[in-house]
Length: 78
Image (cartoon, rainbow, N blue to C red; front, top):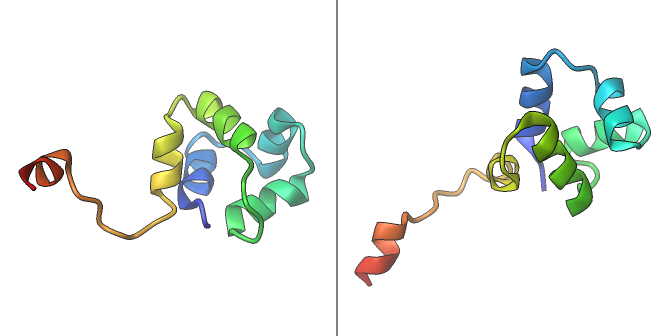
């Protein structure tokens, strides 16, 4: 799974990969692999990233897919 939004959020906040990796208490190379989708992001890191950027975990995960999601209204119509 590729989390596109973590790179965009990092750049929007003018953070380096090293800064975020230090915040997460991991090596920069590991964080780089998260951004590139080579390595899965543990839920604990997703939670900490959501705190760092003040966004929900759902927001971070949403960037991982291009699939359309049905709205709650569409689900309730059935």
